[in-house]
Length: 264
Ligand code: SF4
Ligand code: SF4
Image 1: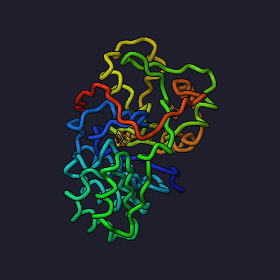
Image 2: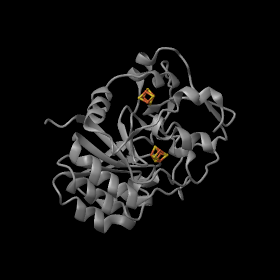
Image 3: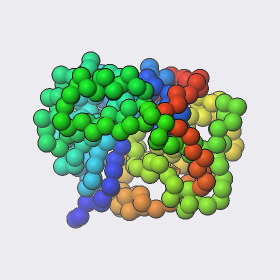
């Protein structure tokens, strides 16, 4: 039987971040650097789900994945359970502390390193790391433009409710499947919504009820997995939470949102 296909799978090695980029499309500007995931559970999830899907690219991502001291194990599990190429994403701040194992990992022809530069200090770190397989994306120079996928007001968050989910999906900055907390999720907004509402003290806010859809368990049937993967490139009703008219701002801004520590 042919395996179902996914273009991209994001694997959350850490949902917390040591930066707070305004408009972060994983809501990691709300999650403190000390936030924890269960790495043992994630390694089990990877072993279960990766051999069942034909994946174009796996991204080991965060938050900041290098905040997880077992990031190398996660990267290795991605490679041993899948034929996909694997990108390790980082904001670069912890790169030199992790230089030895990352350079060892980059010897694998299917592993790449992507550094997203959000603050100018990281430029020097990239130069010192000095490796030909590094791909750098620049967000620090006020050229790149981001937007809030959902509405932000007075420390609270709200669905945009533009009633045009197809157009919202068209503008979506991260329509990538997420592996988080034992489940596959359509995108970061669905994966991390509960955690976001915990930070903003809106866990019981009825305005979010229709958007709180469970992800698909990694123990799902083959039919469920096929349906999920087949739908991954389509818009869904939950896309109504996201804007269909992006209001853009510089991606270089660090926000001052009060963060909370998240524990799985
Ligand atoms: S470094 Fe990346 S994960 Fe962290 S807040 Fe910025 S965009 Fe989000
Ligand atoms: S809900 Fe839809 S538009 Fe919003 S982030 Fe998810 S996939 Fe993208």
